[in-house]
Length: 262
Image (cartoon, rainbow, N blue to C red):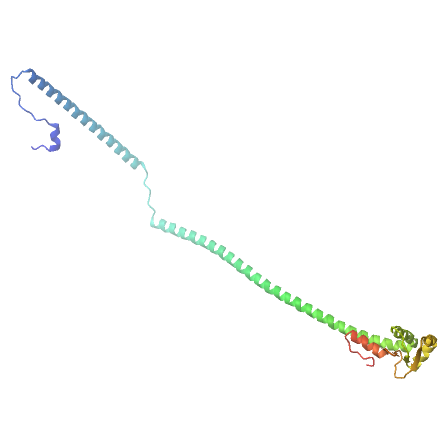
């Protein structure tokens, strides 16, 4: 039988020794050979024992692992129905979450859109109110002007009628008119004429005729002068204090063209 090269390390080539050779060197060689063979045998036995111990340890470890694996209960695999139920539950949960998020997003978007629309409408209403306020203010101003115009014109008509009535009731009102016209002159230069209606001339002579004569005035009667007025003529001045002229100046100063004879 052939011995492999790996197993040849455990064998020692045997060689025949000479019989009857008892020389000390030979005996020593034999003793050393026996000691070597003994040590080699012991080493082989120790190695075999260690290998056996290691094999036993590994076997025990494998047995313990197997026992532990066998002691763990087997996890049952879900059935098709259970997998379908899990999938449906996940789908429902996702749908509910998406629905809530969609409602929240829609609510926020709708609120913002409504807010923007409300602001836009409020701005439009504010602009409309401002336009109404402006037009109302203009209308009030125009109404005030129209009312003021009408009131002034009415006042002038009333004043004219009152003046006419006053001179008819109190013809002696001509005296203040004459005095005002004379006092208006800065200086008196001859000739100095006071032109009056004949009836007013009579009243003036009765009340202040003497004072006028002393001042150098000469009263001239003229039926063309309406009662209640007069005209003053001097060398350098002329004052028209007739009632119609004075009324016309007053009306023009107030922006009206209301004739005394209308």
